[in-house]
Length: 356
Image 1: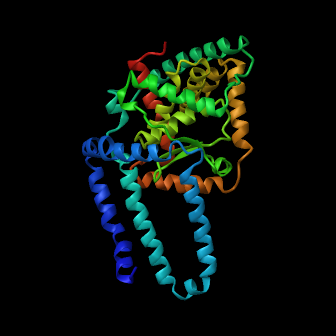
Image 2: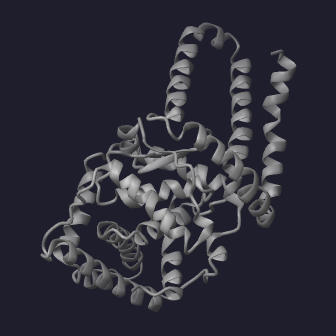
Image 3: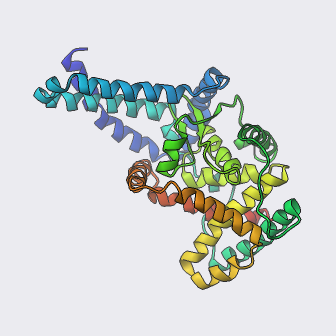
């Protein structure tokens, strides 16, 4: 490849960014022609191609590219020092190609019509509505915990293997589709990440590989949280990018599962977010509500907290900061805080469909 072509590819990232932002200002266009059009075709093709493989093609590709990049830099370090300008040009060229490929393969989903509009929900709630929802959710979570254990002080231990949880999640999507066809999921490509240990140290439950459309789930995650995380990553696969939306989808598909353990996992997950939101606004009220939880439910939260505490490290904030910048660059103004915006969807959804 000659230098003129390389320069052109590197510089093309500028008009690409302009075009992406311009198209992103037309969410209905993205929704109709990309998310429900081109992306639907692309994602189904790659899930058919790689879904049946017992290992992650995406992780393999990432691993090879990382090893090759390190080898290339070490092997050519003297030449790179002499031609830093060309080295950075080549990096810009790679980023330009990656930017184009990312948006064609998945990234335009960041600009689709918001989920609350698709479901006909309000986009805000009052503090009173949050308290009422949380109180009902506490009752529901306590009820499920007791049904499972017959002892309010006993921790809930989900008895399934992670493979079984994945299979049950697929069944949950089939059940959810009967109520909301927009959550249809065919040709599954759901795998445990090869990099689960690394993901845990970075503080993540999983990720979608946008280039191979494989949903990667962190196999280190305790089973108490595993069903919702699995549902979350599939949510990315079916074309939802905003983290609050896929958090909600993960909750929704787990809550609609007929399995009692899944219902408990979903209720406890939603409750953790609503309690956190209350704690930010009124810590005294938070402690009053938290004290109403069965001791077994509290033990599950403590189990999850101990898990993450065991993997705390100085680099985790760095990874979170990078991901925060990535989200903000892709139309999620709240960045990593957008995960917590699930509360608006939870409250307004259950105003429309009350907790049974």
